Amino acid sequence: MFNLRYHVASLAAVFLALVIGILVGLGLAGSGVTKEADLKLAREQRDSANALASARLSQIQALQKTQSAFAIAYPAVMKGLLTNKHIAVLFIGGVDGGTMQAIENTLLDAGAPLPVRVVALNVPINAQSLDTTLLGKGPQTTRYVGTDKLGALGSALAAEFEVGGKTPLWTLLGQQLIGERTGTSGVRADGVVVVRSAKAQQGDTARFLRGLYGGLAAGDIPAVAVEKSGTTPTTLDVLHDSGLSTVDDIDLATGRAALAFLLSGASPGQYGTGSGVDAVLPQDPSG
Image 1 (cartoon, helix red, strand yellow):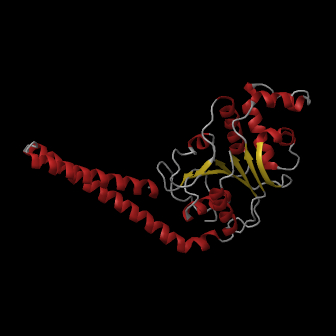
Image 2 (cartoon, rainbow, N blue to C red; image 1 turned 135 degrees about the horizontal axis):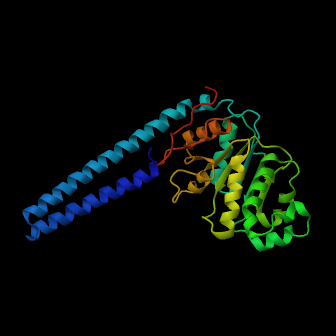
Image 3 (cartoon, helix red, strand yellow; image 1 turned 90 degrees about the horizontal axis):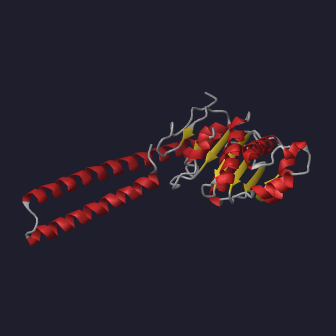
């Protein structure tokens, strides 16, 4: 699978290197410095660059044809996939408007309402401040005190985020953890979409997030991490390692369809148009 933006940039680089190589070769040849062996090597390098550029161009054209063809089938493919499904969205970091719009489009195209809740998580966390808040509130909260309990705290918050209803930990810690929130916590989610808009985290925050991701993955509803095509470096590796399904091209029609399939019960995995994925699309769960 090929990432269109990456290969456009790569193709441009190949052509630039080719032009520079030709100009340098001609200059050296005109000066009498370059020997016949050097000219032969330059020609071989030019031919190799030509072949690489041709291959990359073919890949780009094939991907463009795939997206254009799929756009025609997209409405029929999406129809009714998520009718009446309640989907929650969790951002690790601030809300990214473009990604949020792509998620909302996915839900509307598949027959679902807009997200039942959207929460943007503040990172990095302040573990000491969280401990201070948790202390003295009874055994239900003090069991999460300590840096060695950050993973368990993240997992417990994940369960509350999915199930909704009474969310005592989110209620207690929300002022510290939540940067932005819309929707209601009173409705159980049928699926969760995760977006990591913040940079990779370390230390206490990384331990907390691993617990959060693992808790979402261990739930009994689909949990899918998404990013836009061409995101560099990718945000999805650590989320996939924690057990979440991933879609690396939510800005494309195939990416939106992949998300809808996964939220409707398709086989978990890594999907998209980037490298290392299982396929562009999961198999339609309806058969």
